[in-house]
Image 1 (cartoon, rainbow, N blue to C red):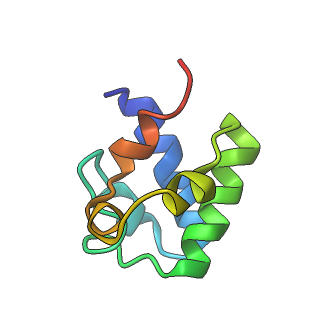
Image 2 (image 1 turned 60 degrees about the vertical axis):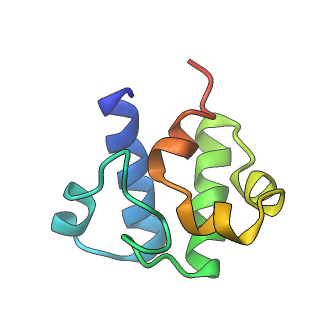
Length: 85
């Protein structure tokens, strides 16, 4: 997993959530969006918009195609894997 990409996604998460730098610094590819980061639906949508704007990845559309268990297990690394290299 590309550590630079994960850091960039963490920065976009920080902007979408308003969390502090220490929170963002603790994000890894294995961080689960719901359980570990506590993302709410509005924050996920804002982050998804930011990821789409920067990388062209439709996070919101991707998440819409998942079942509940897949959404709960979704990680930053899962989204990073969608970004074209």
